[in-house]
Every structure is written in C-alpha cells, then in structure tokens.
Length: 279
Image 1: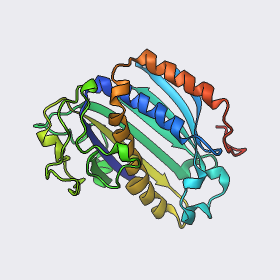
Image 2: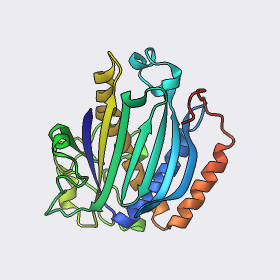
Image 3: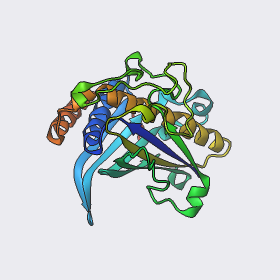
Image 4: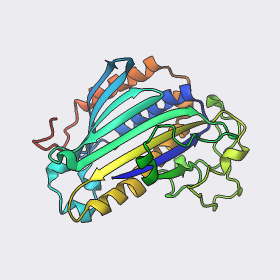
C-alpha cells in the first residue's frame, strides 16, 4: 500500500470550486472520447446514506492505449478497464476505483476535502483523518499550477500571468522568482501564493493504492502515484482555472444540464469494452 496526499491551492473559493470542478470533469470527459476509448458514464444520480447526501457517479475508464508497454504486455484486456464509483457530498467526497477480475489485489481510493486556505495558518496536517500508521507512510506533495512539472498538456493551460476578472481573479499569478524558469519545490507551498492577495482555497486529495501483481506491483504503484495521478490532478486544475470565465457565472442546475447533454452524446459512442466489465 502506498499513500500520497496531494495539496492544490487555487485562486478561488470553496463554493465556486464545486461548480468549476464539475464543469472541468464534464469538459475533460468530452475531450477524451474517441477511437473506442474515453470515460463512459454509467450512472449520475443523487444519493443519501444516513446523514450524508450528494451525487453518486459510476464511470468506466477505457484507456488501454495509454497503459505503458512494459505493463500492457503482461495484463489481459479485461484488466484494462477501470470502474470509478464516486460519492460526492461536497466539500468532501471519496472515489473508489475497481478493476474487474483482480478483487482484493487492486485497491485504489481517492478521498478529497476542500477548505479555505489561510496563508498564515497553512494547510491542516491531517484534514482527512488518516491513522497513525497511514501518516507514517504518507507522502505529501504540493502541486503548483504554475511551476510543477511536467508542463501543461495544452499551451493555453500555462498559468503564468493568469488573470480572470470574470472569476474575480484580479491579480496576475506570478512565481516568487518572477520567471518561467523557476522550478517548483513540491514539498512546500507554491511560491505564487505568498504574493497573491485574492481569495484562496485548497483541495486536499489522499490517494491510497495497492496493486498486488507479482513482478509489477512496485512499478505500477510508483507510476500511478508519481506520474499518473500527479499529472492528471495538476493539468485538471490548470484547465479548471483557465475555464473559469465559462463556469464562474453558472449554478448547479446549469452544470446538471451540461451533464445530461453529455450522457446523450455518449449514446452515440462505441466504447471498446471487455465482456467481464459489468460490476
């Protein structure tokens, strides 16, 4: 089992982030579709469990072509379709990933909490209540939307000098060194935060991952936490902020309308499935 806690500070507030995150997920789902691959939406509906209520989604990730060759040759197709089951009771939500056929040999949980960020107090050390044993193996990484590597997937997602009056980001985002050549130290709070005077919030994501497959366990766990989740979270939040002028005026009803439109679009798509996918 490996545990990484990603901390992502953004120039917005907690209520608006909910709209932005849902908008971003919708757009990214639409962008990834094609050639039998993409994110298939199986369910998207309200739920209630005791005192908790929110939105439940079940999606299937079809991305066989993106699995590295050194892993792809060893794993049958039926293990390359990942189910994502998310309970979103914002500002807290948790997402469980399942891989048909692997049972307890595959465990992947992403738990997220979203809180206002106070520059003087910083981020609480254990906002998601990890156990003493979990804290001992946890690694913490601050993802810097300006200076973390790799560079953005799309040039327009470069956040240096970002400003968006439509979303009340009225001060340009700039690194502490004042240059694009600055390299982020992900063990520390991003340098741009110190000089930013607008609203700030922090998204804390704890990823717990176990992949029990002889000969591949260490490589797959390191790849997932050091590269895959790191890069996906980083670029997703860059995109979220770049699209702020589009989602900032929206409300939750507008988001649900976009999600319904996406479901209709997906009915025309043909995902490359495996016979054992249904869980």
